Image (cartoon, rainbow, N blue to C red):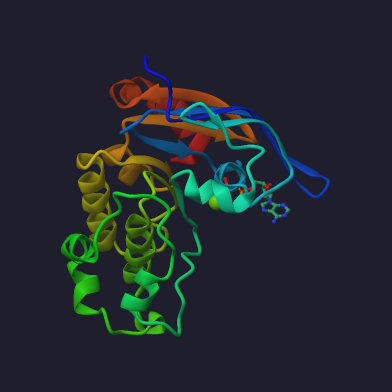
Length: 234
Ligand SMILES: Nc1ncnc2c1ncn2[C@@H]1O[C@H](COP(=O)(O)OP(=O)(O)OP(=O)(O)O)[C@@H](O)[C@H]1O
Ligand SMILES: [Mg+2]
């Protein structure tokens, strides 16, 4: 197998004195959609925040195309091509859809143009002049993803993009993820919604108490269902 695009080895992380990640290993290959599963408090969000460097107290290895990210200053990590869409989405309520889209700086060539974004998200095109406060949860989630696509990031870290959204919107987000995959985007997805995750993921990791306890490919899922039911309480 080729070198992974993103490689995490022995990652440990702390909130103050509280030791939360205890040696997490994770690989994401170019063009893959990898889903991180685990119950509440397993350490999924902490893993994403540690990769992005917004959580600073950590140890271990984080590499992108073999290049060390662990010792890179925070503002350089986005410029390495990692785009983070946090659970809270971070839409600026006083700005319009269009202004929110324009806000994050471009970090690399090859990002989506505004035309491409509005084509992929026709609902955002319709609402381009609406204020952030006027958007539904689903529209905010789409805007949060769309905004990162414009920056040229080539690996997306999505934290529970379907949380709290109606089934029809969840389906739309699934369509968007499949469209991004078809364009060759690399995606690391954190999800509690297993039914959604199983439709988009090429590979899975399962976390428990700050450890990775399993990894398997989509075609191995059937054989894992009993243990997943137990770990995740599906
Ligand atoms: N800011 C924080 N300060 C202290 N402890 C935290 C903080 N954020 C999370 N934790 C703790 O770290 C552990 C992992 O939390 P994390 O948010 O990574 O879990 P998660 O897998 O994303 O869960 P969820 O599915 O609920 O989002 C939990 O025990 C949580 O209580
Ligand atoms: Mg979380």
